[in-house]
Image 1 (cartoon, rainbow, N blue to C red):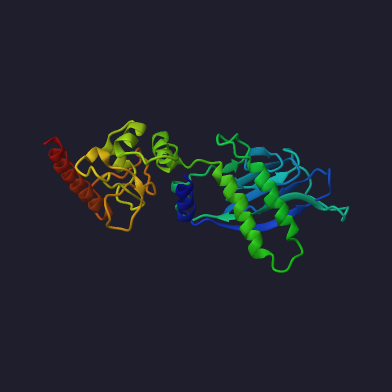
Image 2: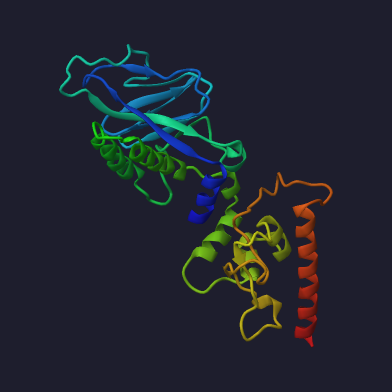
Length: 295
């Protein structure tokens, strides 16, 4: 699953930049508004204070260690209350920082299709994997605060900001990974123990082997499905193992997972035609192997 998410983040061209840390008097009520002309997403994280974040008419609370990623092209704000207050001000210069940091996230045009982020994403939802994201965020923000006043802090600040945003995105399951049948297959491939056979994966997905290959983007080159050593005549012994270089055996790819509801239909042209031809060749090979096995 980690490899799938890494590939998705790379596909959307995510670029995170650090903006600044807000300064205000402790225990004061304030509301900070971001420029309304922002096209990119805005990320906001809080280290020590409970704050509210909002986009348009929607707002949510962030506990310490929380992160929010908000889509642009709408009014965005952060404050100590859900109600409006004056902008933050500093009367006590000894302790001006409130531990609230923000910046921008730029995505490429594939983001809506690949990640499908909501307009306001936060890390406040309970995680089914037991990961305490708040502790990681607090440590990262603490490191960000320690860079204030250092020479040329921009690159390390951007790197730490990317850590904060990646933590927030890890709490969101992209639409392509919401198909639990395929998720079970990916977990079985990546889990401990011997690699599962293709029929075993098809049983996990509650589908046929041919449908499983089509939905997983057969031919992507990420995973190879060779015959089990010592029993090359049995097509049921095909197993899923890490990929070999291109051209070595059949393939079973988890890097091209497709949504079966929105799969393209129509004439086979380009790569789709090549993929269909590969499937037909594989079916003929399976037929010959099955006939030899029956004899």
